[in-house]
Image 1 (cartoon, rainbow, N blue to C red):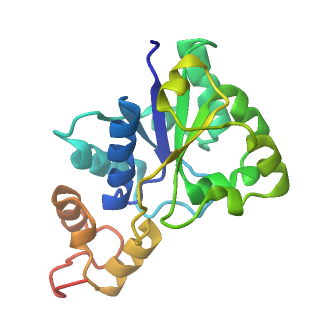
Image 2 (cartoon, helix red, strand yellow):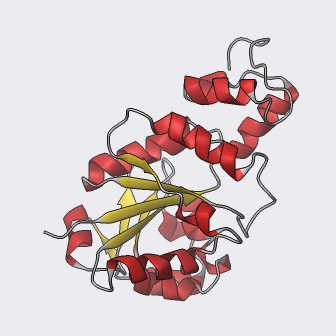
Length: 223
């Protein structure tokens, strides 16, 4: 069976335990390496709170020594805005039109797909693996056109992703963590506790480089 290449893009500003839980669950469910790909200049949100160099360094610390999670610097090295459509075209140029490629996203990102550049074309270039929120289904939240395009694409067996190059949808039953990167940055800036939401090496890096405002993280104990 053909190799499945899985890419998990995001700002990772900073990478936190929720990101890693999704990546590890996908690694286990898909039996494939997960290429974690920090964005250089995300077009859908404000500029990152940390530089690309810092975000890549934190991601490398977070996945060090863990099986199946890889740092992929292609968007950072390319620079400019990190449009997913351009990244997928580059991946197709590298791996060919028949290679199975999957794009790992959280359910909120998938629901917002119609705001992405050339979003309809994405289904011709990759599968989507959608990490769901507990107790919810993306089917309940999709815009009409996205629901129409998604209809009939959902599969139950991850092996099916290896039998086609693109166009299928798979639910990843990994409960999403309650805290987002935005919430985490706010907690750091406000002096609330935050270290428990990050791998220890990432928390140490944030404190050592004084990222996101007040970064001592030691004054408050507990959640």
